[in-house]
Length: 130
Image 1 (tube, rainbow, N blue to C red):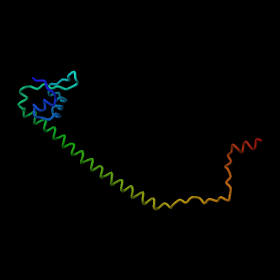
Image 2: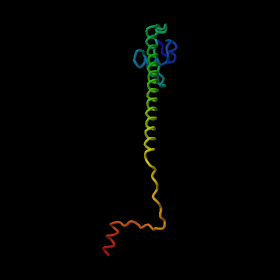
Image 3: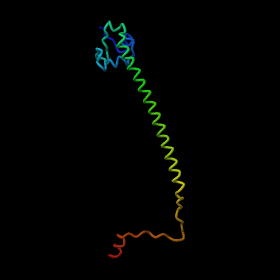
Image 4: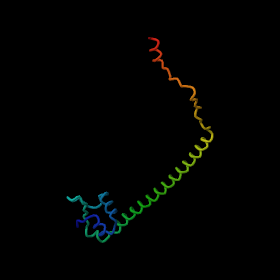
């Protein structure tokens, strides 16, 4: 068994680095973390002959992940288009409602009449107690 990095193991096994990481995650390949934090994989000399079953299993997982991403992206685009349509409908409704509401005009200003300050009940009580 040879100890090598994930990248080296991927080259030797003829698979992607992600495939090696998936094997590590499933614990289907012997591995360890070195003192430097690097992940090392132990590859058997017989595995370097590109075991067809292991390689095909990893490749099918890689492509299914790609298919899942494509489906997710397609779903998100459909969802985005639906939300855009809802937004257009809401804007149309708001525009119709705004047309129905008459413009609110400001009250006419009469500068000739002085405005009285509002009298509160507290100030009335103070005046009557005097």
